[in-house]
Image (cartoon, rainbow, N blue to C red; front, top):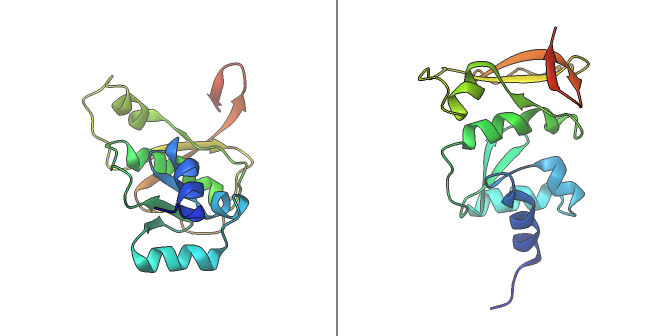
Length: 137
């Protein structure tokens, strides 16, 4: 069977991100927005939030909501890095039995958005220190 180029490209792109990728990442890999719309229509990918997609044949991860949240800032700022934090980070590492209603995400202080934050996200702002990770203000 001949491998489809988009299939290989998206799989490699999403492989390290629990099956998720952004439209910006797909564009950078050579896929146009029109092609993403076609793939969504045929059911090969699903749109999980604006600009964030998931390969439908990729196994669903119990941590998928966290990956989706971490990729969300990159929709408009491809270099932006969101870090799962607060109660959400404790839940990921099993350090708390709390099950937060929202995914807590810390983004750089210069990150500004003009679109609605998804209801399932709680945004926090902090300076990023490469030696120590994120440092809250």
